[in-house]
Image (cartoon, rainbow, N blue to C red; front, side, top):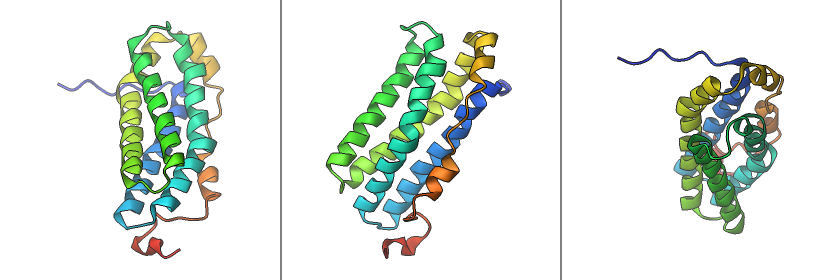
Length: 165
């Protein structure tokens, strides 16, 4: 018997909205690779979106959510490790802007990380963070991912003809 999904507290909903956009980033990377888009174009997008969106999201999670539980918490440690892995992959992508394997790894790691947080960690946080703290966190404004993405004009992921920049 599957347990009934837990309703998200408003404090966590804004992070889940960010995660929806993160999954879309993974899809865009994979779609660009599938259609033979030049790797450097995809890398430029990944680096842009990492700097203006994902890094801020990670910092918000760590300061607003993760810090509310004890420092040695294993579930929090796994999420922070995921953040470090993605930071490292972004650094590697910046150094080697033509590596499809790195782009695939980034897309996979981002999706796996988001799935962990959505399916496991967020329920755990919601059960273990004090209700008053959750109310304070609920005042967080999520990143405006749509606006951030609209500023990027090279929509390489849109169709198979996208490689014709």
